[in-house]
Length: 110
Length: 113
Image (cartoon, rainbow over all chains, first blue to last red; front, top):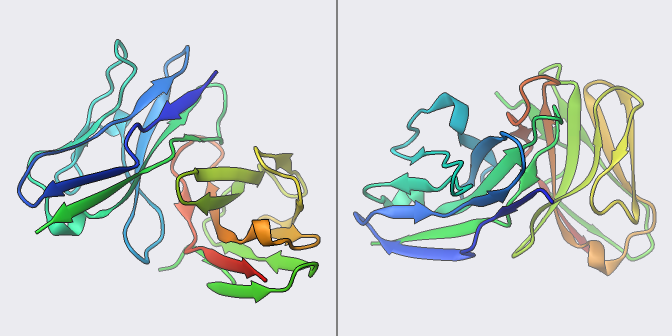
């Protein structure tokens, strides 16, 4: 079954500490993977996608096909990173649906 | 430059009422989606549409219906609102190819009393 798992519902780290938001997926093919973010009182928005291999707001995510993971990382957390983060998978046989993880709430403590 | 607009930010309705949630996008996207967002449950797909007048059930369609008469507009209808439909409702759109680049609306917080 196709599934995206975010094992942590809540992650709390101190400002300046490294952050890693975990995402594991279950999919037999080669998926597209995404991270979306929702800041307080703002709309959900795309943060990054694995095919772009880019760094957005200091965040990076590497697709590890062997471990079926797509963890989101940032070396030094900032208070403005506090938000809800969702990992999502797009199956290659579907050009419009996303499979979502349950989300991780990230809190950056001052 | 708002691209996906949901008609109401907050709504309070009574049990049994028929409720309409409207969503309009101005990006000429083929695909549109309705999700509900609940703490601890993430995003759950209610319905989606990949073309005008086309609709597909998502994971939790019971108690809901949708309408897409025009490409830019996708309406979610609660036929007879119930308290367990109290939630945040998110509309999103995407192009038909290159999936995953969803654009979301700001959400409608619906409370059914």
